[in-house]
Amino acid sequence: MRIGFFGAAGEVTGSCNLVETDSCRFLVDCGMFQGGREAYSKNVNALNFDFDVREIDFVLLTHAHIDHSGLLPRLTVMGFRGPIYATLATVDLLKILLPDSAHIQEKESEWQLRHQRRGNTPQTRVVQPLYTVQQAATALSYLRPVPFGAEFNASETVRARFHEAGHILGSAWIEVTAAEKGHSRKLVFSGDLGMSDRPVIHDPEKVVPEADLLLVESTYGNRRHRPIDETEDEIVSAFEHVRATQGNLVIPSFAVGRTQEIIYILADLVRRNRIDPIKIYVDSPMATSATRVTLDHQELLDDEAIALRAWAEQHPDKVKVEFVGDANASRALNEVRSGAVIVSASGMCDAGRIKYHLRENLPRAECCVLITGFQAKGTMGRRLVDGAPFVRLFGQTVPVRARIHTVGGLSAHADQPALIDWLRGFRKPPKHTFVVHGEPGASQAFVAAIKEELGWKNPRLPQQGEFVRV
Image (cartoon, rainbow, N blue to C red; front, side, top):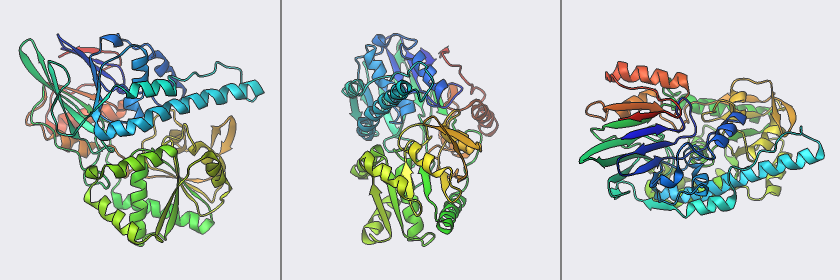
């Protein structure tokens, strides 16, 4: 058996692993690289993939985030015709995310071409969409929903089971049993793991006792998240600033998972009288759709989320949430100079409506920008976190005068202690452990922590494009 690493090896995005047995070949995830121009080059390089997609029998998908699913349309364009297995909620979310990803790409390409024709931008090669909305729709037809906990036959020799990962709605870590030459091997793919004791969705399920092969994420493998009470204090501080200075609070947010959690946190702060009653503008059509999907999957919500929703329905004057629909309504928010709480995508500030809100509010010292999630290297969000005095938006230089608040306690990724705790579920170390989905420093620190705290001898960092026989 061989496993190939075609993404998220030595970096955070682009998760894609190829497993080859003597009887089948399958992928675990097929994600898009994210993080500016460098990421686009990597995606272009992936347009033809480094393997024959027509020989792939099926795909197992851990969750719906684009860095795990975003190249599925390209896979089908290149000739893949097998099933793509995912949880029910993941399938529902992909119906939103993949067409939206294609739409953003098409619009970005159109914007570049239009501005070049007007002479507003340099005459460089226009970035072409990686795939179209129609191609994204075609990829959706290959999705096969599977309930959590149900073992299924992915092929004649491979069985799989999805377990709750606690990262976003529908996210799973995957248990795979693959038969080869009369022997069965247990493979575990963590996908992205969430924190325990967090609101909205269920906690990550503990791992199986044994495995021959483990791939584990390490996004925050080198740190401990800020305690939730300190995170709440930071949010309250941002609110107090914009109330006192009559500015706006802008919150870049991933449409799936993070937006719903932010709504929960803000409503809970109002319920506990830590902040005044508020009105939240959710300016993201995708976040609106994702929230609807979340409410449709009540079975995946935890008790805290259900109880808070009941409170909000009983106190409609305390928390008002307006889901902004068309572009005209979104543009109208730019005329609001104070008192607005704007939650908008994308979470790393590289695309979507958030860019317009940053353009309007970053130059204003009375405003705050609340960064609530991981910001990949090369993204607009990362530049803001790193303290850039200026950023480029729509070809313009925009000064950063607004306060930038970075809160670490809302990450949808497990921190190092939580990852180590999840690994303790193994009765003995897997025969092969590969640490993936992390920037080099985080992954290296996590390898060291596994060795020190668990006594495992074999964790290692794979290289991009590497094949390993296991």
